[in-house]
Image 1: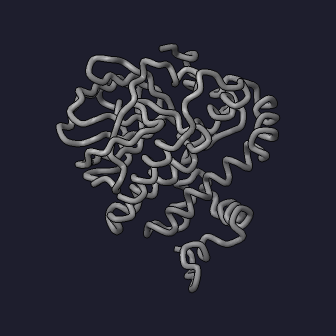
Image 2: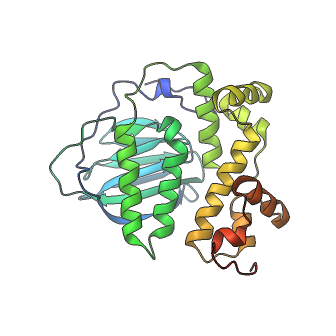
Length: 282
């Protein structure tokens, strides 16, 4: 397995090496979700060890780290997903504070799903949807557990249905996917186009040209849309104040947040929160 450069993203061409094993899981029904959330590790110690005897472990990563499963080591990077079967011996080796979205699942069925599921996966162009579903699963857990179960099932089905991994992709595609993964892992932080471009290993001007041709959108426009997507989810599923939500999605200036909401959705944050009877900002 090859590692695509220190400080840059693990690109699709590196994530499809044959030594990454396939996994088989029954997806004929939604899994039972035992735990879900947003975890941050690597603050007090740079290594964690654990084992879940009866539970699958699903993670969406926002960081670079080494994942060891039953004695075999793999690299994870922002925007990648792991699906580890029950009873596996798991070791994480972090590079510092590391945040991921996770779900621990119980699956009792015996009908293996055939498809693109691997121990380590790249969602590719599905990354924004996968991120939204994982975020929705976490947000709904306390009040709508059935929604959490459906969202996690949706993540697994999308991963299973994604195109078969390719040994090589175009450099343009790889750079755009790397930039998207970096953005997804840092939606709540201040970001600049040069920062995103540096993470993808290219210049800001080159990244702008690639987004224009590959995504039909500017980098700034894509970042703004993803922030507002996240804000809409928080507005619908939480009791956070609008000003707190603005800060949580990386747009702490309330006036700028209102303007961004209107530009992306055509509606104010108050209207998005209560479509029928908007209430004053809190």
